Length: 402
Image 1 (cartoon, rainbow, N blue to C red):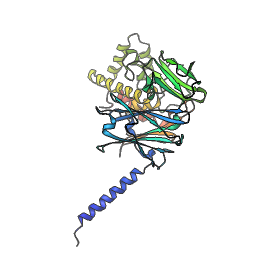
Image 2 (image 1 turned 90 degrees about the vertical axis):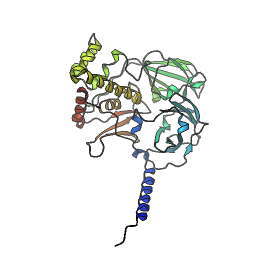
Image 3 (image 1 turned 60 degrees about the horizontal axis):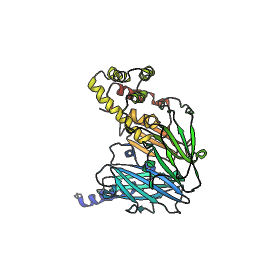
Image 4 (image 1 turned 90 degrees about the horizontal axis):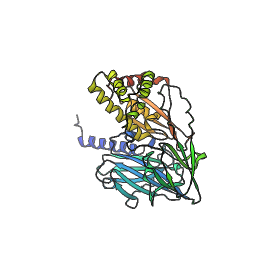
């Protein structure tokens, strides 16, 4: 009987690993798990703004990198273009270098990336970040169809708040490719409602009153009142920048009057109404948690976990309304961060549960009816009822996330 050739076995194993790595490298972006985008402890988060200057595109990229170093010191950054998230073609990769790097401020790393006029404006630009220690590789997708014909400015410099969907600032300027263009600023001062649970029937959003003001290119635009803003040169075409003016504490919840509304998802109708109309909001808030968790220590730790989730939802999902009020924010708060996230051309899929665990899948469909860049709406279904109430019950008893 022949002895096994250990060297041959090792070589075969290595060949199999190499083949597997090659296959993984050829996966379309829609098959990569991108759950790190919604992990508050992730090494990095990406934000962007796409400006169309006449015929050319310019991408403003902010990479929030949790390190004392700049992201350029620790990582290799590159970009390529695909015509769809389902595409396998990742050719023509170009590196980001010091000519693109604007600067490093606290955790923020700013880049300006001018694109060739030959780039197809219907493509998706993909940023790839690979740390030099090879431990992490991140992808960030930028649909170039998001481009707008104006650029928010802070004096002579780009206003980097444009890469966020919430700002505390009171004023900035808008520069346009056409100096004669008029800038429309639409404001909703009344708040939008929180999302309905995933097993509810979808109801059309309530139409809220708006106020439009028009400004010349380059004029200073005051952002004084709280609420939702939409800046556009063509508001009827739903193309522009949507954001919220928030207080200096946002995305955190700091004010007593702001504590009760996010409890909508784990309170009964009667409890919620009582929390909103009480004369002593702090007392009612404390009694809600104590009566359910039945332990001051457990109540305290649960409150911290719950409002951490609210903060993270605000950070990741704020658009035309606070992140906690959105469909994705609601699911994120109640279920926690997803184990798997897959981005598709027309939807985003979240998966909870790994291996042999019971898996729960949520599908968020991209709706462009009101906003060209799209708002993600949950595909609701009765099947979510049992798993939803199980999660709510865990929160109410102070057992979720421990």
